[in-house]
Length: 345
Image (cartoon, rainbow, N blue to C red; front, side, top):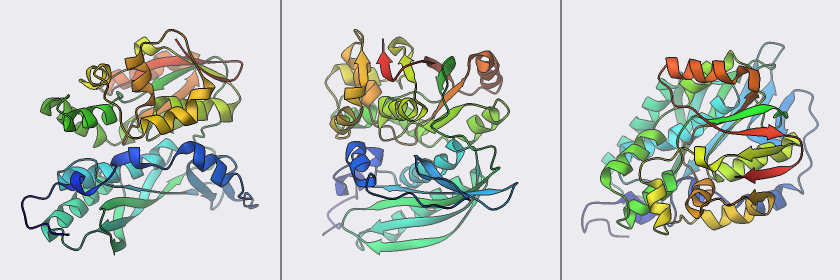
């Protein structure tokens, strides 16, 4: 590899970037079906059912959260890449109701990459970990032609304060805490179908930690929480519905979109993760006259997306008021019913 011919663009070195690079959820289901769940009284969350992170109880007051996440470059700026990758990993801890304690870097880089670029990636990740309340304490780096970066994170949560995916109940109201469309905007930008300002907005959202949203949510006892990442809104909503034994009804006209995402979708922009998400969740969805642009937004793989929250309807107004008082984004997108699957109207 010769990187001396001009400025290095990180995304040129990756076949697929961000959470769009995630392994197919449908194939993961097949792969994990053969695993025997660990029988350990203190393993509160493992593979049965799988969630955003594993949780191990230390005592009656403390449980450790374990997670890891890494991916190829989603943007060209090294500092943005490091911050986004770190945010995506740290957000798994917030999605479980916990707070980060310690993180380790997972890194794979071509040896030819300038040291200055690597330093920017690590420094930006360190800054995000500190902003989340944790410490970046080391890691492991290997040589690889395709850059990859992320974190392994340990967090803390009270054993009775875990937010699972499988707790949604009929009558709940469903919210998201970030607009959708990061994949559409970034792909559109590469193809000249989204502008620089739209890309900058998408990057700003991807760099936004979910810690403030989680802080508001802790006092309101949600029934189910996950974060919207590579499987898209539809894939992660299906996970909540399936594991909770309920039907979720989404209102497509209420889907929040990053500026430029719907325009890109209407122009036919799709990410490489779109068909895999359709393969995973499509057969569990009932679409009732939903415009294709909103369907594409629902399948779009998000990188470092917001929280997806299922909360009793009587607490929904308080949740919205608390978010608005702190100038945090939130949008009601649906409700939980008796039944199964996901209905999008």
